[in-house]
Image 1 (cartoon, rainbow, N blue to C red):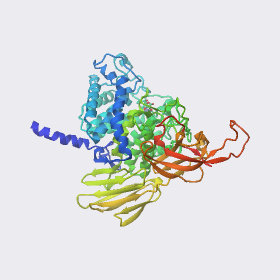
Image 2: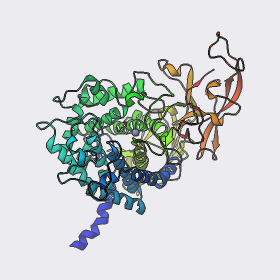
Image 3: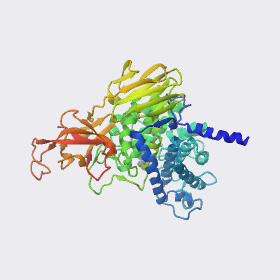
Length: 636
Ligand code: FUB
Ligand code: ZN
């Protein structure tokens, strides 16, 4: 009997491992079901390089820093394994949990014995700190036990729990067992037993836990977690908050009464993500309507072209509509991540390409910029212009609030899970990268140099003939795309849509997509005052910028201009910034009227001379010595 059970264990572990980032398999109001992370193997290319650095450099170096800053010791002191004071801000537990989730995602793709061992050790330290009643939070323990649930606005107790649950679910799905997941469930049950309708009121303060609770519902089937997510999203009327708090925290008032994005950007993005999860389970039309309203507010008035969100440093908050300053942009990496994971959920809920387009935009640009090419330093802020003075370091290995580094790590580690999904009709291709997908009994092989070039080939290999629809995303930026099936049938894919190709597929069928990669000059709405008279340049999904270092004979990048429309020459540079395509442009440079150009002078028409400019992908900015950078460049 025992032997029989033992034989099944590896199989069980594999089945558990066959799980996606967000499991909408049984969600009644989701249009799409994501595919397991493990089913996608990215071949050599743009993202696999970043993912390797993430697994081999970023995760180990950040764990060392979490150790060095006492974040793991905060748990060990509670179990008596270390006699040290608690260190760090009240939310440091969540930073470790995010690291753990990232490690678990890596393990969903591949087994790395060293990483598994490190994760198991941390899990052991975390779980040993849990109190018998289930309470687990290192800040509100020991000498601060009396402060539990007293700081609902800023206490982050439920925020930390959300990240604990997500880490536990991810490791469970990696075949790592239930130890961490059960610890999360014990703490969740501790909360649910004491708080909620008919019990004591509670406020989450920092949205995050809703996402985790809905995923916990999907994992356990226990409806109480979904209901509690709904309770938190709608706010408890017994808790009175000042209007300022209601706006800033983006929680506490009914989510479905929201009309615009405001306050702390990360909180707002996480709340919207959790609300989308909630919608996929309940189908509540009020949620759908609010989500659409907020999405329009974001994309029409409050988002940077990089996909970054939250323009104000003060309160890490959204600004007024069109308030999108470049140099002082806050655009926290976590905000970009929030934007990405929200759009992923909107895509799953609806199957609409506009959400995949935005997911791609924020992933390749704002999110991607967040981690250095070396994988060991991170941006907290991702501005769209930098003065580049020697003292300013926009990328650092560690922050006192180190929320962004492990957040970036968990996105990179889970990336294969975002490429495809399925529906009753067939297979959906959202993102492009060489690699192999095992979709049930069918293998799909993608071959492409994307995002550097726009040709993609999909080879479809069912074991036998199989009828299904292949939905391929035609990015909005690409314009009408050429789609060829087996070099016989040519179709035109409409931009910003999925092209649905229904047929009986047979082994070796090939679909070729050709996206127009001509660089595009983009303009902002004139109400974005900082960008008046300026253009940003994009090629494919990538946003470009200029850095001082690359411009020959240019004193200041603020003196340069773009000349003529769309005249950019792509040039492959294997030697630069890990291998990129730069854009060459014969632009202009203001000629100074006198040696010392005055600050103000009577109006003149400035003369310019020609200057060859080199633009680099935005995500690579500040990866060399300090230098000035800007995305939006004046147009002559
Ligand atoms: O509050 C904890 C983290 O710090 C948030 O998620 C970030 O936005 C930053 O405020
Ligand atoms: Zn952050």
